[in-house]
Length: 622
Image 1 (cartoon, one colour):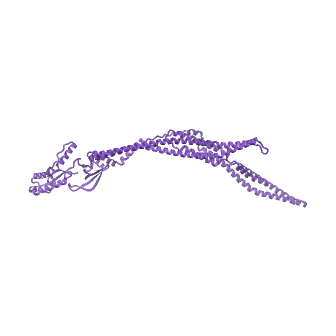
Image 2 (image 1 turned 120 degrees about the vertical axis):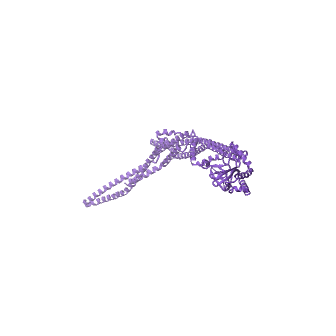
Image 3 (image 1 turned 90 degrees about the horizontal axis):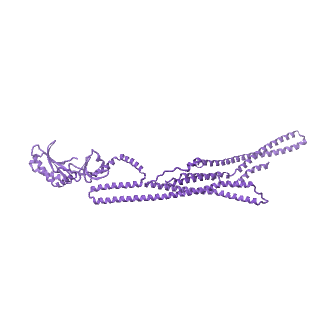
């Protein structure tokens, strides 16, 4: 019985030794890692590389997708064939047999102990009624049965924990079997995640990806974007080609043990054939079962290795396809880069030509236009024309979608017109200000109650050097007044300025008179005095009058002094209006005042008519 116990305990150990003696060329983790790597590579091949608009993109992409599907099919075919090559279930089966033997031995021992106890009871009953001469023999028999019963109880104490250990080991082996079943389930689950490869219904739609309509841009911005897309596609192809090489190396590492097993199996077959051809007396000749087992093993290993070999070949084809695709994009990349360089060169040349025209325009303006006002106008027009031409060069050079540009320009123009209304009016008024009757630096104007000399006219504003004083004597205040050009369009703010080419104004001198007296004497005296002063600058005034008549092609009344009597609230006064040059108006008015006071002081008749001191004021209010 003890020998049977030792035999049962040795069965799991021998099974483990048999499992270790024939290691498997594949591993479960290696198979799952291979499948996950192939699936990841397949999805990157399908989605990572974006077409760049070449006609051959669809061809290369379709070829890459087809080869990727073949690689996935070969990988799963190899994984499914590798299941029988995983570690066999000899150890679990041996452990199950040992467990059953232990249970049977435990039951037999319990039954034998029960039988021994029954025999002991019978012997005890016999001893109680047996004669004295038979008691010693019955007692010896009982002692022998008790010793055998003690041995049986000891065996029960030993077999009970051994049975529990064997049961735990059997449970563990059952879990390992379940893990092997989980491997097949994992393969099936991974296979189900690729219906476009293994489902016949989806293979047709997946074989022909939809064509992408990619328009070729014409502008420089579109060409730069196209160049960037091509460089990105080249980088993606390089990365995918590197991953393809890494996957190919991993598959080759898996093929190494399989090829070694194939060579070892072939060597075993040759050895069996040689043994069968040359039988020896001390060796058992090989049987048909030996050759069948060896053939089965060879088929299993070849079933795993052949799909892996096909997978390596498919990966080589994928690398070749990616290399051709990269070469095609690189050629187009060179053409686009050359086109961009040529376009940039043309833009630079055109800009240089426009700037040359601008420089020549400026030089000719300063050389042939002597009038400062006209020169300023021509330079302003030059600035607008050159800016417009430069804008056209950039628009036609950089923009490709003119329809989108027109829409954007429409919205932009509407927004600018609403938000910058005052500025736009000021810019529009600038062209009126520099027109025929516009402003120029040095003009004296009156606007919004401010009188001053123009010091600058800009696109948005013009500036006046403010003049102020008492009466007709205006002096600079040291302040510059800025007005928006849009003030020209305001009806409530008129602007007064001299006619171009003139610099005169009207003054008047008035003397209060007595109601009775020689009024004609006062008028004649004042006219004679003012006429003497007026004759000094009369040629300048006459020349300006002729300029006005030529400009407007209309006859004007002569610019001469005029005298009149007029009634005012305080009485009667004699008034003489006379033109005076803006350049020497102060000197002329001062001379007239001094002479008139001198004449009145020397003539008693004038003193009798004059009722107060004379006053000189501007005849034009603005």
